[in-house]
Every structure is written in structure tokens, then in C-alpha cells.
Image 1 (cartoon, rainbow, N blue to C red):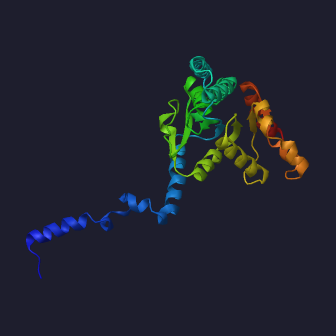
Image 2 (image 1 turned 120 degrees about the vertical axis):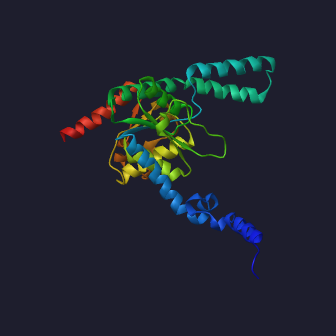
Image 3 (image 1 turned 180 degrees about the vertical axis):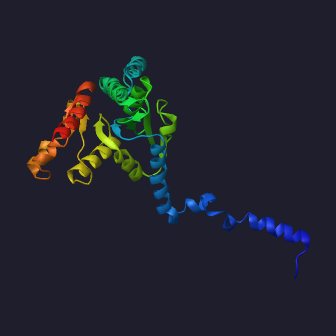
Length: 285
């Protein structure tokens, strides 16, 4: 039966609204489906690469570290606030626990200053006009990551932030160069981009995320999947306090030479000098 003109027009409008009629690359439901995961992985690899090329980023230095390590004045203020609350409620076990943690964070807050100074030193020396070598890259979040992006910002240099989408709220810190503020869904692709241009990796005290990124880098260098690069563990006391690499050697689970894949540093200038010396020595080989 032939449709009337009005029925034809109504049917055409309904057809246009059908999900099947959407252009594939504009169909978010389709793009977010399980079957399209390979395409999403490829896009997440490609988009940041094109952006970094466009911004003439030739090489990077990766700075990892904990989100909970605050700027010294903020860490001190947090301790004072909890001390004041505990005076009015001295038997509160939760406040006692939180104060103990806050004091521990305050004791590590100097790492914020060191991360900022490290990025300042690197960026001031390496980013001249449009020559973007050793660009500082972080996970784009707060804490040590903010400090490193801030150090580059202090000297008017570019820096990169690679944020990750998380179930809890996650925002980029305000010191990232806007054109280099990237967001990832897949941890694997994010870690790949951390290392694709990396000339060095500096790991400040942190938690699970920092350990994940550090040990992936160590594994890739150990297995020669990537070319050897300087890896600096910043804060010798912190790192030796909970990772006994020599124990792994004694247990036979790593080789003695694997403990030479990294060095310790406690001052920004020493970390930067080690990285420069690493590449100067290669030039003479």
C-alpha cells in the first residue's frame, strides 16, 4: 500500500533518527562498544602522537610521583588544622590516625619543591625558542606531578600532562601547557606515550601508580625492549625504606647488574647532572 505524503515524511524522519542511520564516526554508541576497542586503542595512540609532532616535542623527561605529596605550606596547614581539631577531641582515633599521616606527608613535602626545581632546571636549559628537547611530562595530576609542571611553567617552558580517566573525579593541574594537556582512557597507551620520547625517568616518592610506572620502565630496560635511559629514584631513604633490591639479588630473582639500571638522588641538581653525564658519556663511547 502506497504511503500518503504525510506518512512518507513521518517515516523518513523516523528513519533518520534510527541508530543504524548514524554515520559511523559520529555514532558514539558504536564507537564505545566492545567490538570497537581496537579502533579506540589506535585512536588513543595516534591523537597524542600527532599533537606532540605538531608542538615540535622532540624528547621528554618523565617525572612520576605521588598525588598526595603537598606543597610544604599546604602540608603544614593540614597538620595544624588536625592538631587544632584533636585538641577539642583528644580521644578521637580517626583524628589521631589522620594526624599521623598528615605529619608523614609534611615530612615529605620538600619533594614537591625538589620536583619543581628539577623541572625548572631542565626546562630553562633545554627549551630555547622553538627547540623543545627534554620536555617535562607528568601524569597531569596534583602533588609531585603538579610540582614538575609548575617548575616548567615558572620559566615559561612547555610541559606535558597525560591525565587518565578515573571513576573518581580527576582534573589536570593548572600548570600544564594547554596545547599539551592530554587525556587517556587506557593506562597501557598512556604508559606507552610516557616512554616513546623519554630521555630519562625520575621517580619521586609515590604509591601504586608510581610503582606501576617505575617497574614497567625498569622491566623494559632490563629486557632491552627499550634503549637504556637514565632512571633516577628521587629520595634514597624513601625508596630503600620499602624496596630492598639487594634482597632480590640474594634471592636470585634479578641479576646483580639489574641494580645498576637506576641511581638515587636527593637534590634536583644532582638528578639533572646525572642525566646530562649519562648522555655525555655516550657521546664519548
